[in-house]
Image 1 (cartoon, helix red, strand yellow):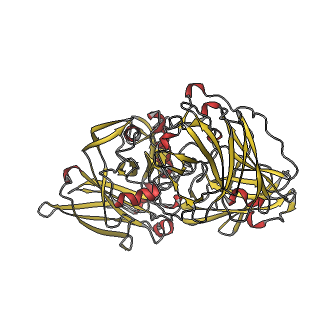
Image 2: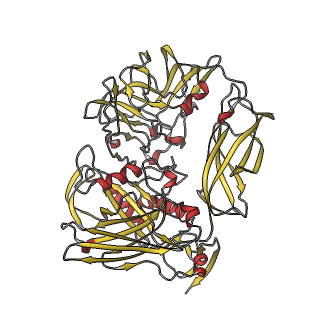
Image 3: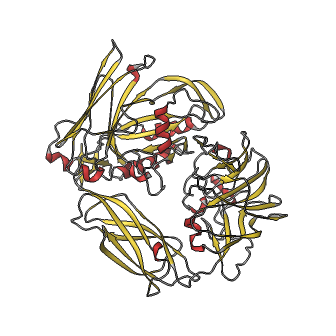
Length: 637
């Protein structure tokens, strides 16, 4: 991996109740999973230890299908929780559908060190995501070794269509040892279900999901016997380099095509369409089973708004594709922009808890990243943990956490989906504040590639007699607003409070006089956002709320933002924030008297002569990026 995060603790323990023959899956304290890594001793990938050869019609299935091993510096373990554990991954239809009708015969897994005997098991996951109490097959070896290990199942498991299989192996965890290996070293994308444990983490034996915690997917594979066509490919995925693009510009796509046949094709051809119209044909592509970048030129007359790009395999080895054609196509949605306004402020949502030992480190990293910037609106959203209830948590906070947060301490920056991380939620507790600052700036800069399509003005009045707060949020609407954000765009108003002194768990000890700032108190109106009251090219929304008498209004802020709708079902790349503004109670803040000429000349970003993002003019050459796509240089004296 190209950087290292402190481990962080996951948010909520699942409360679903299942039938007695199944076991629920929980998200527990991921800080229990300790990374051995020593950044001063980073070693290269190691050659694999002995790997059993595959037989006729046998194939490897898994999230990681190579045989190379990561450096042992990247080994993991429940180093403070000795005992016998099961660990494995959920093999989803995207992994196994090419083998439908075939049989899982063996389980292969990698270890950094021997852990004694091991039992491999295969479970068929229930449709509600729960795990049955008994496996459908198992096998055993009396001794494990460093490197790859393989266990033959006593009964092969037939792969069925649209079924998920949890495949695990047992190991003996010793204190202070790090026996487990993941694909994080190779920068494979983490997947939901890619890292499961079974054992007692203090609340009884249960399955615990450590996937998407920053540690990668466990190195486990299935050896499957199946009859496959000689030449077949699957279009696994396409992903944009940037979700937002301008007409006439180069659009980069990360394309992944996987081998689905019995032999590796020498080449294949791909057509790319936009909204059903052919844009470009690629011939003689050769990259299979790993990502490759292809580029297209967007039409100069492409309208502002949401568009669909489709890529599909047309030929394999010069012959028309003919097998399993239903998986030869991949699609993605992206936005073409034009015009717009400069973004006023960046909405930064920090997901935290009083009971999270690494959350103060996350706060330190955020302070370093936002220091000196005057364009930040920060909201600290608190949640409960299994170890205790946070006094700043409430039902509205839980709604935001459920939709956006993966763990504590994490954060969302303008709720934007960042392709390099394949997420809109990011770890905050970095070992290096300067490295985090660079990462923070890269995500924020990415979110500002597309200008805003509405301005935000906030006016508020407060009556001390009845503690009533009235807020009016208004602004101008760009002609492309509906095309970009859709008819379901939402406006949200959050109230935060500073200088709240309360206890905080910090690096293994309690601080009973910790100062909590930017604490989310309430959403005015709906926490899910409210429809905009649009009249022509303007909008105006009114909100009223009687403040809690324990809140100190002198320490409070109003944060208003316009976004795509937040919801449980919304995709991670479809909740981004268009614009944001903040102010204190009883004041007015925003942009007024916008003219047509200023729309295209608004400054979207400012850089110094070295190309570093700056938030205010500095002496010397300043490079300005305008909303109309122009980049100009000015000299500040």
